[in-house]
Image 1 (cartoon, chains in turn orange, cyan):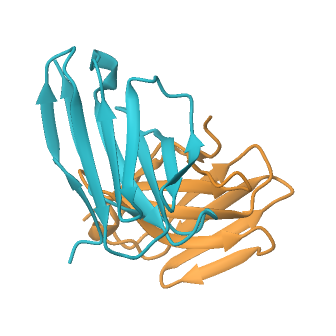
Image 2 (spheres, helix red, strand yellow):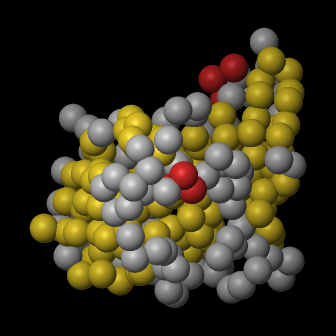
Image 3 (spheres, chains in turn orange, yellow):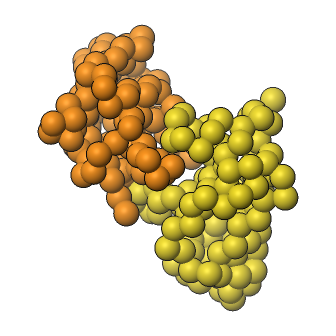
Amino acid sequence: SQQGEEDPQALSIQEGENATMNCSYKTSINNLQWYRQNSGRGLVHLILIRSNEREKHSGRLRVTLDTSKKSSSLLITASRAADTASYFCATGSNDYKLSFGAGTTVTVRA
Amino acid sequence: DTAVSQTPKYLVTQMGNDKSIKCEQNLGHDTMYWYKQDSKKFLKIMFSYNNKELIINETVPNRFSPKSPDKAHLNLHINSLELGDSAVYFCASSPSGEPGELFFGEGSRLTVL
């Protein structure tokens, strides 16, 4: 069953702007991960945040996790045309599964 | 060197046929997965093997049968293909059964006519 749900479904921004997308999930987790998928390609891992962490940074990416609200956000700062892609959150639990949502499609306009 | 490779990348076939998709990883990982991505980009896990042992078997029609001859390979065989099987199938691997970072292949787009 689907665990993570991303919001919004689609996002269009100007190059240089920040992009924020959110993920909500239903059950308890061990970790939450974000992936990027360029059109026609496989998913690429971006960042993993554990359930006991609240915030994590990687380059222009900032991820927050609020386990009390069962939600996470991904912020991409100073976006570039190359950031155009679909972004997925995925939740890892004790059942060995990594469950994905349907993603947020981000378009960065030059 | 491709870490997780799938073949074929594209597969077009008629309803009722049987087809296979192969996956190989050269990362030395213990765990491999098959995911199905539908036309709305929703990714659903199908199967997972850890060291050749089946550990995840989601509610998938039994027309789908995974096979892991060794921990570097996980193949997916589909019998009696149906229109609804059209999707992109992704193979992935991870170092252990715990759901850490997954490494994905490029996907195999299956179109059933």
